[in-house]
Image (cartoon, rainbow, N blue to C red):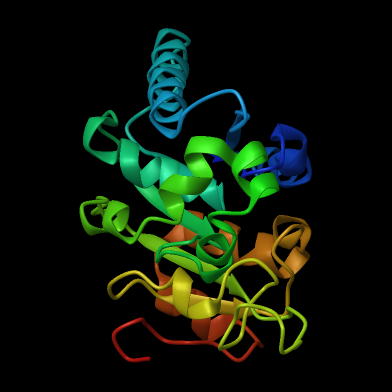
Length: 228
């Protein structure tokens, strides 16, 4: 199965290399996707992601590889890029694993929305995810999906969080409809490097069952957003 790996804002494809290597060893075909929000608008990034997905799948097909099923394992903003692209993605999208996704307008981005440095380095993408109206029409992919949320962020009163968080995104902000949420004691930036997260990813890629992943985890987990 081909697996696309869009990274988070402020990171690079290198942040997903360790996970890509683990997926390759497990028999998957990982494909990194890179972008830099300081030089592209959010919509431009989405369009490039769509082009890469289509190009890679066509190349797979021409090479005689199975393209009937493919998936995305995204980190942070990479998941919002995927959601925005969803209506135009090719057929076969059958697994979506969201690592630390800001599926609700993140408090951190909202608190920094008018900050000079935040605006300078995140530009259009930073303003986009800080806008609650953007989420009103953001598509929810109708494919087997799993959210992995970190809750090991520091508990300082001056931080803009009112619940468990990973230092960037709150657990509550990762929730999306009734998609199962796996909570891990992780920080946002390096969540994808954890072995327990890799184990959950591999289990879900194989079985497509979030409840199975939650049941097999030793962490304190949420069942679904609806039940939370």
